[in-house]
Length: 353
Image (cartoon, rainbow, N blue to C red; front, side, top):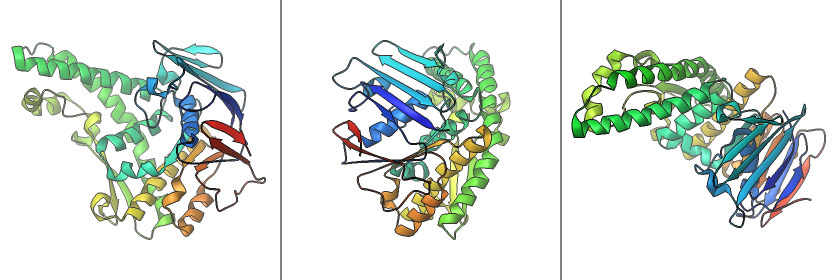
């Protein structure tokens, strides 16, 4: 897949502009705060209608604008538009309105690789679930819709559990449990279908960076990744006491290990960095195998924490269209037939150098 151009209006600090990209290598250079990451964010947003670093869409609107609009065109005449103001978010795909974000996500296959990815390995479980959910959503049709519905049910069920502490009513347990089981098990089914591939690819890419063995396993309170009435009844009193749903896909985790020991406790920072990169490379390869085309690769200062040897290894593993953002010119030449395209960013202005 190749992103041909993007047009941004009112997005972050970027000055309104239409930008044409090279089909192979795009280098984006600028000082910290100039807008390099914002350009990568706009590309990711164009493909997923969500940011990789901001939960609230309204925070993406530039301070002096009342709305944002992002238009993108990929090869094979694929194009999309996102319009957002204070009241609505409108998605358009191929000239047709899209009512559900789940039908929009992934039209442009994009993988973001950032120095912040180290927190997938060393951070809270929510970081790892978010990585897993986004990866599967871009591969498995309907996963995002199931996830949205499941999260809604969990919120409603939590409010119900909290109300039990006040009036003791339990008549809605059966209804909420049935919905939780239905949508939770659909998420489990799609996660289980992709986990073996993630596990093997993570180990394969990790072997390029370390002599030690990288591994990832899925951790769930639910036996065999299956929600049922027995599981829910076993935690009933605990849920009533806490006022929240304590089992299900939203509470699970990924466990990373190195030579059989927990990465969070035994891996060096360099090994954690290599693991996070291997994870993103595994994601990109899974997207390629499921869709038959290479995803657009976004690299945000990812080389900054790597030594020369590992930089060379990473660059040798990258395939497809690449967007490389850094404060400095890269100390390498892309493997493409031509030199690609160099952009300089200064105070939100993106110019071809």
